[in-house]
Image (spheres, rainbow, N blue to C red):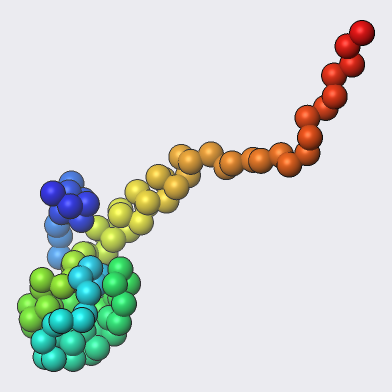
Length: 107
């Protein structure tokens, strides 16, 4: 199970006026119609997210490229971003001292 599916399983799905769409598969090797659809959605590079209104037109476009994208509601997107921020916050900063250690005076 990939991370997006595990995340989706943990967040309840509710209707949202906005959809967050992330391109997770590459564009090369796809059909021209799919490339044009991704261009219309303003998805040009992998792992980029765009926000679009939840309209029938956009949902039809997403139906065409559903194997290339991941669709999230506002709550799911915000929860994922919060989880990523919390994960980044757990890593302590790394301090490196390039000064030589102090010489000990022994007699």
